[in-house]
Structure formats: structure tokens, C-alpha cells
Length: 315
Image 1 (cartoon, rainbow, N blue to C red):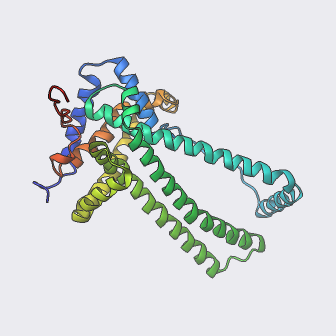
Image 2 (image 1 turned 60 degrees about the horizontal axis):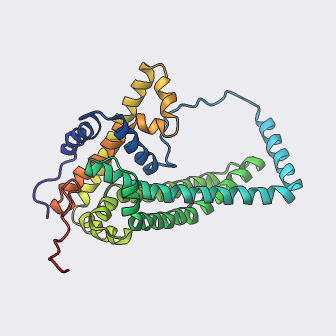
Image 3 (image 1 turned 30 degrees about the vertical axis):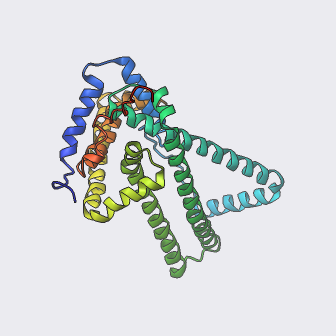
């Protein structure tokens, strides 16, 4: 049982105060860039730019599109001898890059959390200190990626085949359309579930691992008890996260428009965009930490770490 009602609004003010304390009291450019590097690692591969893309306005007739599809199909069939090896190589390289980015991001999350929780700008110390926890988080995320691939790729392939056949044969039956809609809804459901698991892992399981020095599954077991006891509170938390995301998006859009898109171009740059966006990233990280701290002092990552045991002479 928690000692007092859980609030989703109270951590907002606390997180803003944490941003001020960490980045502006006093302002230190070196500290800002060091913490920005840790944040960049923590969000590596997730994107950080806020550029905008306007699709082209090419229009063509239905028959022209069908002819292009048939022409592309014939070209692929005639060149399978090199398309298949190149496709396998590209897919393998993509998976390797994704795995490396996931490993760096898992290690970076503990570095960024260390900086926010301890009000320190350090890279080497948290990188070495949380190697066990970071690698455990990395393995957990690899399993989630495997689950996503196994559950989503067959659905995507099956849906693509159905749409392709209906388009080529001009046979848009109600049954076929409903089947595609059902497959799309199933894919959406899987994506939502995996997204929620990833969100709860980053917001709550990682801090528990940070505090207890536990493996990821052990952190999930402890957090699972909180989630089971307070399912409504965490549902409200996830819904409020949508509100916060919309507010952040509006803020970014306003800044981009006021600066005539200069800010948008800068935010799209690797690392530098993260550094400029650092107050928002610190706020997001601090918000979930302050929210978790409401469930008891044993979940307060901002509390000073316990002092090491004092050794008697001769020990």
C-alpha cells in the first residue's frame, strides 16, 4: 500500500525543478554537453529530430500503376540471382546495426539516469558501474525485438499478398477487405502491447534495476507487484503521458515556427539536436522518477545512496 494518493500532476512541478537544478543552477556548458552525450546514447536509434516531410504530388492513372507493378515484378523475377543475395546482405547489416544501437541505448539509459538522479555529469563511471544491468536490459530488449519480428512480419507479408492479389485481379471483395482490416488491427494490437511493455520498462523497471542492482527480469517481477496492486494508477499514468507528449510536440512546433524552421534543422542534427533538446529529455526522465517515488521511499532514486559499510581495523 502506498502512503498517500498517487498523483500524475505533482511530478510535473518536481521534474521542472529538477531540470532547473541540473542544467541551470548554475549553467555549465561542459556539464550540459556531457549529460547531453548520455541522453544521446539513451535515445540512440529512437530518433530525436523533428523534421517535416511533405510527400510529392505525383499522380497517375490506375492502369499506369498496374503496369509499373507488373514491370517491377518481371524485373525482380529476371534478376533474382543478385537481388536475393543483396537483399539478405542488406537485411543482415540492418539487423546488426539495430542490435548494436540497442546495446548502446541500453547502457546509455543507466548513464543518463545516473546523471539525472545524482546531479552529476559523468560518462565513464556509470558506463562501468552499470555494465551488468545494461547488458541485462539489452538482452530483454532483444527478446522483445524477436517477439515483434515473429508476430508482425508474417502478418505484414500475408496482408501484403492479399492486397496485391486484389489489386492485380481488380477483385476488391468485402471478405478480402475485412481480412486485411482484421490483420491490420491484430498488428496494431501487438504494437500497442509491445510499446506499453517498452514504456514501462524504460520508465519504471530501469529505475528499479538502478536502485536494487538487479537483472531486468527481477526488476520486472518487483514492478509487476506494483502494477498488479495499482493497475488503475498506472493506466492514468500512461494516458497522462499522451497529454505530455502532445504538449511537448506543440512546444516544439511553436519553437520551430518562431525560429523560421532553424530550430527544426538544428534538432535534426545527431547529438547536437539532443543537446538542444536536453531540458525536455531531462524533464521526461525526472517525471517518471518522481512519479515512481510516490510508491515509497524505497523507490526514490533521488535519495542519497547508502554509505558503504565501515570496516573495522584488521578487516
